[in-house]
Image 1 (cartoon, helix red, strand yellow):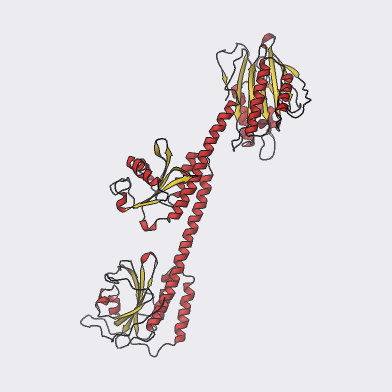
Image 2 (tube, rainbow, N blue to C red):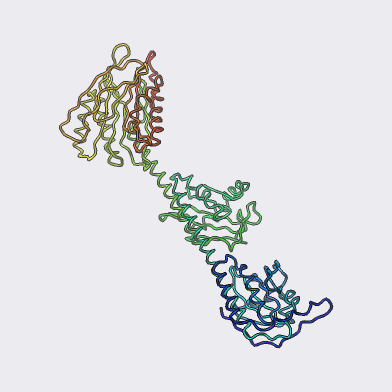
Length: 619
């Protein structure tokens, strides 16, 4: 900013009369040295480097200028872009706090152009311009007859003017205009720094909000919860209200809303469902590549216009686009002045992050549905009804990534026997799913022909070796044949699978069959032994996968060590409650498992034979 001083006008005398102000105070004897000015200006510069408000400079500024020869009053006024005064400070005595007056009447440029920043001008107090100014009364009361001033630009179109009033009988000092320009330089530099620091703080706050919003929105893969997080995170940090609409078969649908005022929530959501807004306005705005700002008359006819229950001063609409697809829109509703809206780039960035979070949640949900559907096809839809037996099964998915697991079970009725089987293909994914189908259906076909458990598992090993799979399979097969007195003779074969258990009618828990055995699909020369047992009325056989036994607590303990006790605690319960109770116990012990859990239970009926028309459904 450069100070310029026009040629001095002839000094005049302020008019006086009854009630006029007292004569101006005597000018100070002598002339302050330039060194005093330089020291004072240096102190202002130092203060300007740390002040958080330009008004902190006022006391030093006023004292410094009041020390100039002939200066009887110093004023500083902030003007709106229209020229109307917002407030004024003034002082006519050194070492006193400047007086502050809010919104004094007067105009800075009376319809003319705004002053040029850094341009010094002077005028007589008797001039028409001086009489229109809000500082006129202060200047006149101090006895000033001439004014020298300089202007500087502030933020949001505002202006500040620093003025000094000179006493009668004194000409304008040669360097006074330069001095006023110098202090304006300091104030302008201080203001620019403060404005920049505030803008940096706003940018940092917006960046922090974007980062936090991304974390919050990415924290859930549930579409509904993600959408609610979008709305909640942005109110009131971004706007006073937020609406999220998603594209569907029938058009845009409101799926989430939030408003700063709790009492306005219902009305605000109703506005977001307004037919004109959803069917007419939003589809047009969502087709645009950039966000749109609506304010003033543009809101007329919308649910946010002046005649609506939910009024707004401005509304922004940004399309939600991710991976080339339009997912919906996010609408922000503001009750603040339209000039204080967040920057368009910030809103676009926030909309993009929200769109990606929504898209990820949507894709995850689609994948989950596909995986669940595939997993269901790898398991029996229902368990058969067998005279004298009660059946139930439970299956828990343990992998949050939703890859198809390799745990499987089945119940097979043969010509003369009834068989239960549980197996596990190592790993997850497409190959594990393919082997799961191969293993289950191979065993089912063989057991339907009453092939003994060991022979069926041996044939499965041959099929796996022929398929040349890199994965191995474990499994256990229990075949039952009716015996006397309602009991069943059992044959069990185990191929590297967790041992089956039996919960006896008296509540004791015992191993069912042997342990160990070679894994399936590893070697060609494969042999497997069988063991036998008898299951009597009230006995419950339990076959399970290692997702149960290897469920691990935070301290590293395995559920396998507590399996017998947990099963014994379920004595007397029907198979459906046994399988769900055992699965819940394992889940609670491990607080979530990384492996799937499959449990199959069969109880030999005691007393009356079970209803043959009832079907045990896999849970």
